[in-house]
Length: 548
Ligand code: SF4
Image 1 (tube, rainbow, N blue to C red):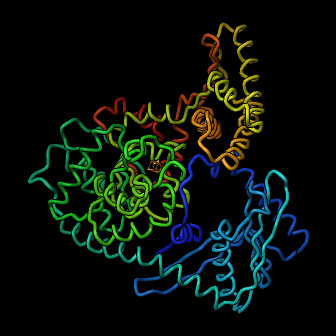
Image 2 (cartoon, protein in one colour; image 1 turned 180 degrees about the vertical axis):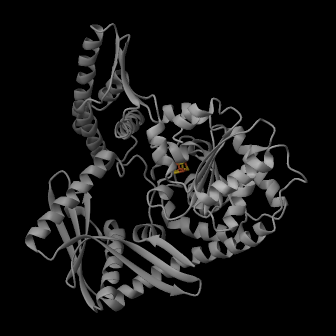
């Protein structure tokens, strides 16, 4: 068998350390765009200086282990073959303040690429280069190291060996799981009317890939009819992971009961119910910062040991077990549950974790290397939920409230003042348009101002660590603006922009009327999707709007 992982995921799992700090700008559209531009700028500059410079070079390394072939791969930002390998990072941190601690994971990446290139070319020595580009000052600083193959081999093999401790537990589990599933009978003595047909259709869809829309009456036992063939498919190698997606809490309980029932009938399947951060957080407030939460402090120093013990000792991942381990290892229970989802066969969770661009599980869906199944329970709910998830709203009142609190921080106050002015102009225009209007498109001026605020917020996060007055309000506005920008990137023909004056307030909404186009893309993350409900009627409408 082959075990595949990207350089980045491998390093981030094995070598992560330190604190949890949420509210950063790591993946905002603005930040990603800036990062890409910085990469392109440096790569072009290098290519001018050296014709032999190659960018985005694919590299891989395969290691034959008793368990099978281990393959790690990725793209090096740049290299001059046989001379040096370069990794480029963009940052707002003053370049003089870059420490070994800060650069550790970045060095780890370039060491992997260096090793792969040396193996590829039969080299024994190579120069590694790590370049930081300061996004505000537009300056760069490079660090260099000369390394030998031996040094890098020790590091690379050590990293893989550490990771293999987790993989071995997982493989041993899967072996047991598959053996148990091969023998698994349907958990009831007979099928209800229509139940067998549904289970067969589900299994066929899983094997072939694609989507199945199933309208099945209440009482037929839809949960077991979809979960039973799906877990059987795990053992057949037709799927790697099942996402059981629900719109409401009680439906999660039904899925859990069904999994428990299958367990009683010999199935050994690890299932995990993802509980929202708010519900599983052990603090009074969800404020994931090392100065407020002792679990956030040093979380990444302790989490891997905790996971390994769970993999060795536990068979099911329920909330109480997660809370107990989180307590023992003093780690965040929410982050622990997310990590355990990697090692779960069935993840029972809200639609959000797959469909919502603000909270979906990026760890699974940014670099897909496995076959996923989406079982969408009560799928008729997905229409409204999708409209909601893909819409975003801002109001003048929240901008104004944040502006007042941002006075001490000019990098926040300036963009918020401009945004407030933008809304004042809107209000005047709306007064002449009977208080409301709608149109297609998103104002580029608005996007520019919102991105400007995000940049200011990144400085705020770095410079102001204490719990200052207004931090909550500013953070909430950050999330609102961040979400709005994310949604603006999805804006297609299925959208309408709606503006309304309510008293002195102005509300501006990007309203997703028809989520079809977005859903089509999201469903591509799965090998097969089963959308089932008693109320998928008229079927043609649901098939169309849900991206069938
Ligand atoms: S325990 Fe709560 S506050 Fe602490 S890191 Fe986890 S979610 Fe955040």
